[in-house]
Image (tube, rainbow, N blue to C red; front, side, top):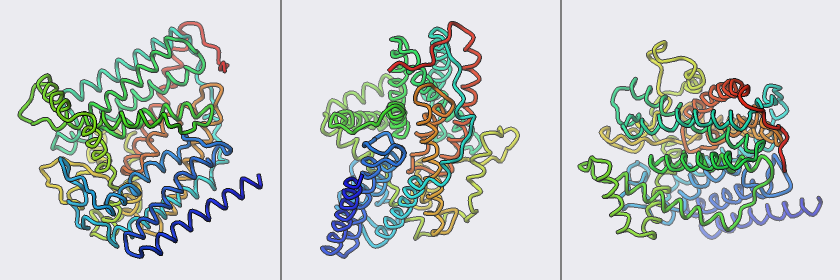
Length: 489
């Protein structure tokens, strides 16, 4: 134990010395940005090497590490891109070229990066200190109803038919929240798409949870099929958050039983995903004059064959770099006139209450994603261009509270995340309501690059769906012979 503590202290000292050396070499904004980016990278790696919730072995399934990867993509990688001056200008409009802050890393960006790093340290402090992790809810320890294989397969098939077929119908018929002008219709469409998405996610989660109980080939095949369907839909829709969400569920499920070390073999799927993102980008950029689905697919395939794997990889990477623009957003909120008056968290209350009240009872119910307004106000995106951008959690909190309060709220959020992790780890042998909640909520709560109010809306909706899932499980529990609730190792 003493040796391990000494290694940690020595690692911390070396990390700080490298950051100080970087500042000594270059005291400009670029040097400050490089030093903070190095500290961000080191702090994220620390969450992997020394996870707080299950210390002893490196664990890539730790939710704070997964959130840290998003933080590094959003702020660290973005800083590197701006410092190096390699903005992706081909086929994309980079946020730096649209905003008011400039296209090179300057003092404004350095301040925004420093503020974001402090907020990230607040999350770390809350997660490791965990002021609320002792809070216990007996309901989370309730064992999910035992199900026979036949009744489980029947229930999963019903879920998949209702969820995936309905969602694909919505997608194919272009009923999306970004293709309608009326605010009420847009919000209703967003609610529909979100609810269908959570329903499909719950299907994957339930299949994985009961796979621990009933280790059958049929259930393995179903779980794999649901995972592939989720990834395929995310690629077709071009939704990176949804794409990563499916992988996070699988990683978190494995991590409920044992730590998950990072291996070199993980690199190959990551490269393949970037190539696939490049392919879906080509499909989404087919000229609007080509309307028929088969013609669009044919055009996209011809374009993909012309580009080749290397250019598709570059296109996928460019897509990711442009997608994670949290540094630009937070800095814009810090230094530019606010897009809305501070209401000290009222939108967050609305996000939690909103899912329980249908729109016909609350006609003025607001939308939970102000991405289009944000893009128009801070990045000069034309109103005719239905582009949605997010300020990240830190930027969203800045719109609601004075800057000193944001890191403090980060401490609370970190504590909640640690508590959720602890509840998930309590149920490693049998599927419980706590493990169901953990797998459902984790993909939503680590997407720091989006709106915090939208995250709260997603979490509330997932809580409602989790309750509904338990009811459905109870109904199907009487069909067939129950499975043994002792997991075979």
